[in-house]
Length: 450
Image (cartoon, rainbow, N blue to C red; front, side, top):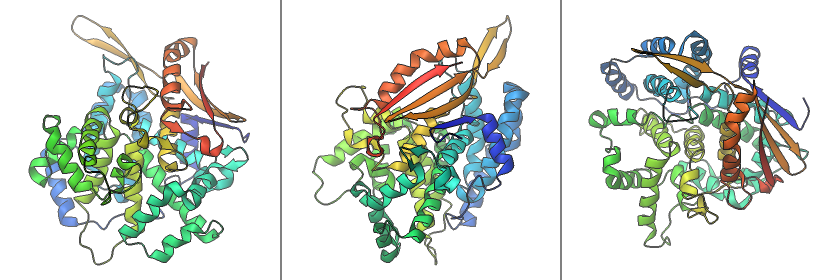
């Protein structure tokens, strides 16, 4: 493959799955020590709902048809298997994901319907490929530098990433192990972090859209002593979230990727509450991150005789990626030239993991179904189109080109109106949500061809 060209497609995903059994890395399993009693309690609550995974898949097959179902089933089966030790509670969320998937496809109000059940594993595949499966030589090349190496360089050298070292110490990582992050030439440490970075990025990608069926968390409230997360209770929600997750990594971006300190201005807490409230209602990334953390927390054995700080860090870092892939509206609510919350911009030298997840989410346009609904007197016929067949990346000097490849001109025509908006909101050099300038990418251009 040309160093400056990468192509992503369903065929590439299927080929990778078949030829590479280690597609989903498992070096840091298990991430948590499971409390079997808490897990059993959650399982019984799930059983009472009357919806199980088998019936959810059967319903999806009836509604979406065999062609779409046979794309979703193997990918979600793989995700479910992977989740047994990376996100054990995912099996209780999956029926909601599958139901929400079909509802998203047939949403009458959206010009671009969005599925999640197939999209999430395909996004994980893109992340895996961008990072070369953990092999720097195979990862995307940016101006003669491999992307995975660039990610690890930021972790080791960027002063903007000191918050990671601070957080590791707070989790109980031995100080000598954190100090090793300052030694760029420490090959052992670099290999360790390559593996951890890849695995965490894949975890974040494969669960990045679990915030869509946010209502599932409300089903747990009455039985599991959670706060009431319903939109009608936003003020107390925000206060509860701030108090509960105050010291967790997902709240760092709200404060400019820093923890709250005693020198924080007195009025900043009220501002944080406003940001949390708006993020609950206007994003799925923040609810997704809360779901991911919360559903892991309630089945985690604590206190535990033996802590696993690096393993727990995988969860915290993955939650950050889940959250930040969809915080564009919080960062720049009015899409203006002076974003109100500029401290939350995704900069590669400050948060490379979230940058990779967000870029992969933008790239994963292929195999996303649009539904044609033909009304009849007593029913409707549904026909699913998969117009986008692949996404391609190429680099010309300091410009990264993203090309969406379609089967026909109709698909191109449908996509064209969205290109300029996405390009501006995500990649504008001055105020776009994603900033890759620290690694020499000063412009990102979006294209659609057939």
